[in-house]
Image (cartoon, rainbow, N blue to C red; front, side):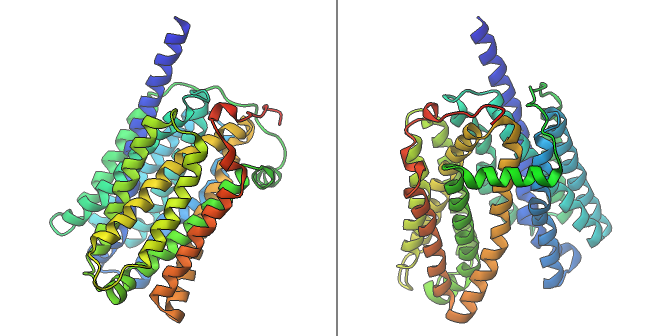
Length: 414
């Protein structure tokens, strides 16, 4: 009876957390896709201003991950969830108001606030899931809260692309406000969660402690390196893709948007599949398949030529979304299991900061290589980096994880 009550409580909590994830990722994806479009249409922005506004939206990950990771390790998680929704709602409604009044500065501030809300939600959710799941149900729970992100990454770009010329720009961000409102409703109904003992010591020392734990762990380090190589590759690929499509493949420029939609579709299907087979496939298979399939898909992009049907490009991007989405869920589960509860927020923050920090580097590197050696050379750079992400996984302890239950969970005092 007690087991039945706990399972009902767990499912109810995950259901509310998933609802909040739908609202959060809807708002976040609207901002991600619509910011450059709205900047051009609503503010008649120059390329420089568009770049600044896009940077405002993405800077939250770099600026917020470490401070929020520390906060997650010592604050009440329910309060942090509500705070994330309030930040998101304030940012989305502020962006809508700024568009109506034609204030680019207010728009930049608002989308930055919304970005902080997304970062805080993601880090908090990653610390909540292991508190309501055991090792056998952890991967399925992680998949459940990843489905909203994957679905929104597919549906939102298509919808915004179709609607942007037919509706007012403020309506787009009003939709983001509705998503933030859904997140706020769901987070306010969440229960309280057991918190780990609060860490002590100077903040800088705690940040260094989290980084040292990641670098010194035989499973977290390859996850960290794999994520860095993969995100550097993907950022370089996106920079090179438009000139490759035009100058090498000779496709219509619109195939770029369809390729991104195919990526989103692959991520959604991969996440949905991972939710169903998480307890049937050995983690090591997923942890190798994700980066390995990316390396193969990227290598196939080098084989596409002027006479190749565009569907080949879409298949490659579908695979780039499919395998890594399953990998993301598996590695989330691994790092939740191997990180001491008192340090989980900082571990997640260190890895997330590295991921989002390397994306601008990948974009700059891809642009530089494309400028010097041509777009196909930049495509080769991306392929090499995808291959490095697979090599890191293949040569590490990740290839030996037969089940989540076999992973040793550290003590709180570790």
